[in-house]
Length: 124
Image (cartoon, rainbow, N blue to C red):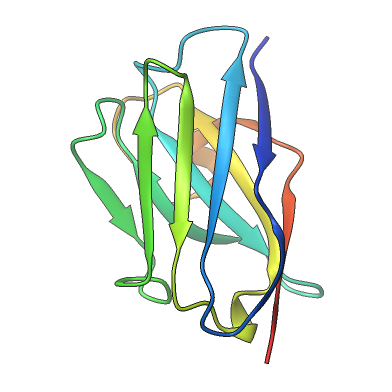
């Protein structure tokens, strides 16, 4: 059973930066794509970024392109989301997800395992 735990959320001001971490346990994720999604109150879960199993290829949502960076450390079984120039509209619960496929994907159905989420709140 794969267990994903997100950390690093918090309350920040617009323009600040945060780095989210997602630590996986239960099995190695070095052969799995990983992704980040977010869900704001009253809205559907939204794709943020994805990275393939090796870390050599990533895909970002247009809304975060140029501000957010997804990366991974397979030796630590951990994926990161570095968020710069945060905006109030980035406020959401951020979820980490792990796929059984090696290539990145942008749909929730691409992922089998999900973390519990971490809250990110950006004040104006």
